[in-house]
Image (cartoon, rainbow, N blue to C red; front, side, top):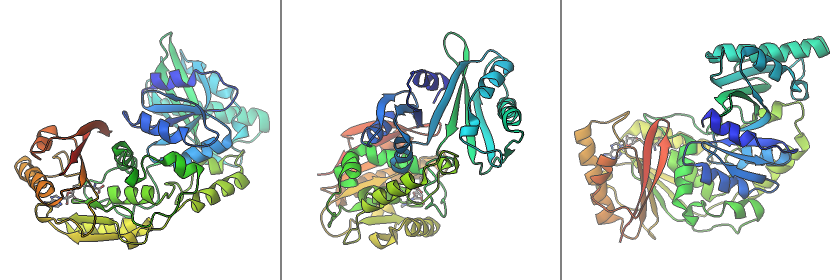
Length: 413
Ligand SMILES: C[S@@+](CC[C@H](N)C(=O)[O-])C[C@H]1O[C@@H](n2cnc3c(N)ncnc32)[C@H](O)[C@@H]1O
């Protein structure tokens, strides 16, 4: 998100803690829908690259535990004019950092953006750290050490132009590490999708069968066990990110169940509340009665990493993986389901001429053998997408880092 948009969202005065769920551009409505579905989350506001919300601690904990599409959740502590390094120093020094970390704990500072005299992020981080430790020394005579890798408190500084002058937004990173690190990835494969982008693709489909629509129900009510999930087919599954995220979503597995979060290392951490929320999330997990995740790829190394990732995510028993060229792929037996795939698009792998042939082949496979399915193809190369030779019934922009990708839907009759 741009620092200016962070600013607008933080500017809302509220007696309740204000939070920012950061996310990729164009996924803000998906993140907002996830947050609105959570109990105790209030004042949800969509910004550019972020969704602001308020609520008690449970709202922050649940946002981290349940959001599939947000990249991290910040707790905003301050938003101040920042015309010089001294302004930053004073603003930081005035905030109650000792409420969140003890002098025996550790901290780190991440900084982005620019303000007068603060064009170097490392200098901004250093200035912020100095102000925090000076406050500790003055008040308590002792100060936390710096641990850039796994601090008890990661402070986030964003410098931005607030319209009427430069400002600094000071927050705590409650997710640390970022939320795409679910804990299941063992191996990446050659061009893996980020978990949060895969989750956004799935949510953007709006397919109830993928668990994307009823997130609210998943949080509020115990759904009956889904006995026969739809078949999900990825014809170029790579490391299996789409299959894994689809499986987790369909079985209502909260994406944060397999990892730790920054807020659990804060001084105000409520361990009893967190245990209760974890138990609540575990109680929602469903089991399926059969295999429903079908992945194939031409590259045996990709299949090995898919199998390791699916195993680590607890989904391997629901998966069938096979080595196959997508041009000769056959659908699994049974009812038609959903194809999800992210073919190579030339940025990181593949030669353009081969790719044209590959996309034509994908179109032929879908047309000839996957009738009755709905197919979702994510690619950042529209010229290649046209080679599929089918008219998409819907398209959405979803960014993959700096690449503008498209999610195309094809209804196959
Ligand atoms: C962009 S990657 C997919 C990444 C995957 N979504 C992930 O998250 O790991 C594209 C995949 O297409 C596979 N591929 C390339 N040509 C293929 C073909 N003819 N048939 C099947 N898979 C193919 C590659 O091996 C690669 O794993």
